[in-house]
Image (cartoon, rainbow, N blue to C red; front, side):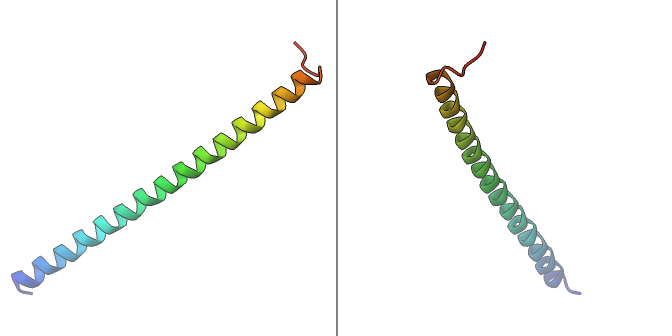
Amino acid sequence: MTSRQHAAGIKAAVDTIFGLTGQAFEGAQRLTALNLQTLKILLAESQENSWIAVSTGRWQH
């Protein structure tokens, strides 16, 4: 194996690692966005249920 072939192999490996790392970060970003969306929905539903409980007199201390 020549030094050029060796360097090309190393470059390909590094490119692969950076590509996979980028995909991992993109996946983490999507997961974070979904978690935030879920949290917003749950908070909105909780707020709505609280207002219903208060307005109907079903709120108990």
